[in-house]
Length: 101
Image (cartoon, rainbow, N blue to C red):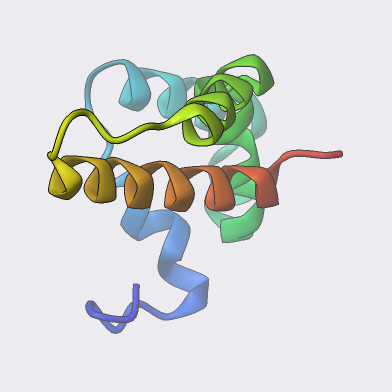
């Protein structure tokens, strides 16, 4: 949001206009269920929680966390290890903030 100068009140609109396929269908269902005003009036944190609950179940997050803990360098390919470590660390950090303990 920082790069696009997207104001906090427009984050849900900005994000949902980029959805496609199954995610767009899911969002359109949410809009129909709770109404346009409520859907587009929700906070970014609420939307992220809803999307995480739908698309990142806790068991999948645990798999990513286990992969991170068990990650090993294959041969001398330190670059691939470092890249995967950073990807997993970032994903696990972001997702764990959205999940209840």
